[in-house]
Length: 108
Image (cartoon, helix red, strand yellow):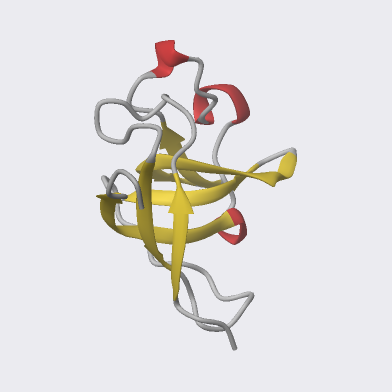
């Protein structure tokens, strides 16, 4: 069993203006490893990039496809890699759904 809430830092610009580098995300993930995350179109999710499972990405779930979820960047011109490059993301690679975004106070 694992803690269902997870804190993730945003490091890249591919989701601007929705998310910016330095933002922190509160992410809900399944309590038991191996369970899939409930995803709905329009929801921000944290997933492992297909082909590079060590790399976490934050993207918007656009639609359900036969092979998984189609995930897109808000700002593809910022160099973000999304389903336009690697195709649908299998449900098992989606780690959690974003619940909230916050910014750490300066000096903290």
